[in-house]
Image 1 (tube, one colour):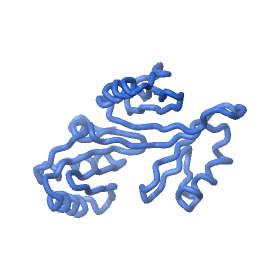
Image 2 (cartoon, helix red, strand yellow):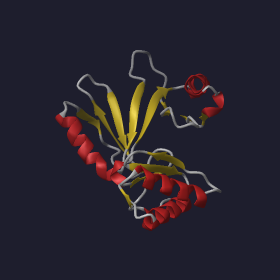
Image 3 (cartoon, helix red, strand yellow):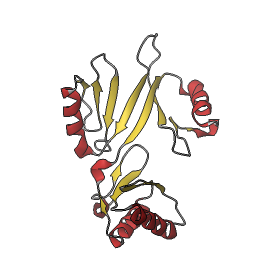
Image 4 (cartoon, one colour):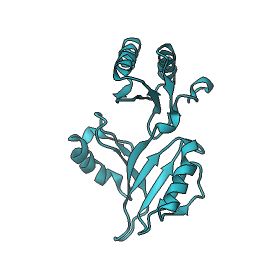
Amino acid sequence: MVVETEVADWRRLAQSLHARFLIDAYVDGARFVAAVGEACQDAVPEVRLGASFVDVATRDAELAARISSIAVEHGLTADPTAVSQLEVALDTADLVELGPFWAAVLTGSTEAFTGNDIIDPTGRVANLWFQGTKPHEEPRQRFHLDLWLPPEVVPGRIEAALAAGGKVVYDEEAPAFIVLADPQGNKVCLCTSEGR
């Protein structure tokens, strides 16, 4: 669980804690990444350096706190509303049958299939999550997107989606997730860590 002092910088999304730190110059980001690397030799966070930001993800709340402290030392500020994580969901009544295939196709190894998830260890392919369902006849939408967002971002995304012709089709489990559909009925879940 993220402790109170870290809430300002980090948001829990699908699999981990995520933060975005803003940089003025690429070299500032490189220095920050190097400092994180020096301080975090025991546990390795996922780091992505862009032209104006450094994204960091970790499952370790203590490591997240350490990284936030390093960001303060480097004069960086966080933008927690900028983090998101895309996960593809496949409805299936038999994940044991489908999991190895999708793991092999997406990552080249069936070892990437654990629990209800396929997670690419390189982070290049979106997570594939198997949503359990009762057996059913085809056709039925089987794939949908799960977009993990900070809770405070969701109302604005819903407003934008509705203005673009979408509709809310299920919100009984909000704020954990809200299902939207495009004008042709294709669905996306806006997911948060709240209410889980």
